[in-house]
Length: 252
Image 1 (spheres, rainbow, N blue to C red):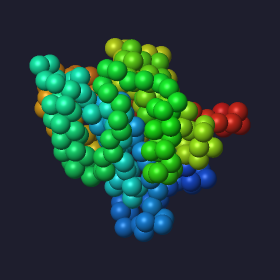
Image 2 (cartoon, rainbow, N blue to C red; image 1 turned 30 degrees about the vertical axis):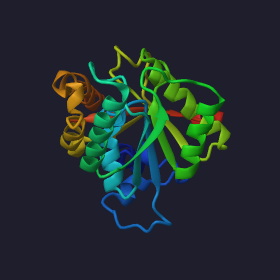
Image 3 (cartoon, one colour; image 1 turned 45 degrees about the horizontal axis):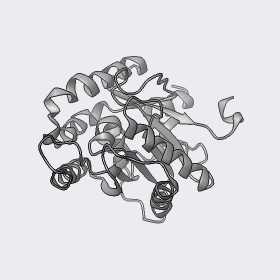
């Protein structure tokens, strides 16, 4: 197998992008003992509890196994996500569910302060995401595809993009898909990650979100998507991403 093919097959096209093009994911796979000074970091920024897990949970598990520090960052705590519950009640329940999901995946949760269903784009919200990402200093950020039927997803994508620019393009920016066709629209991947060995863990993490009726969407929507992307990539399960390139030369 050619080196380029090996890198793509293991997901290094995505996971090695932030380290000068080196096949980091391929060469570091299984190395979870790197020191804090050498450990690479990825932040997966989602609008709600369950977005990072359902959209990139397999990749998060694979990156953690490869030795990355993985942060699951939530723009809201899902305040409007449980019928019959107040915002405070729903936030308490859904935050706990997200924390349980992060334990399953072996990643660290971080919660921002926007309100589910009432997310905003203004200078204060731009600053919040910029400061949160600056504090984490990631090598890679993965977030929502910006063309999406859910307004919170669109807000999250815009805030992440702004932070990428304002922080001087110090991390690689990727977009994930959410319920493509219903939510994400016009999504065309540039990168795939084989998540076959992580698919069961991803599913377990998604099912931690008990309040969201996971039986009604996890397998049909995101399980179906991972099988579809897997067929495109030639594996059993895959997650697909769009890499936003800063320079025109990146496209050549």
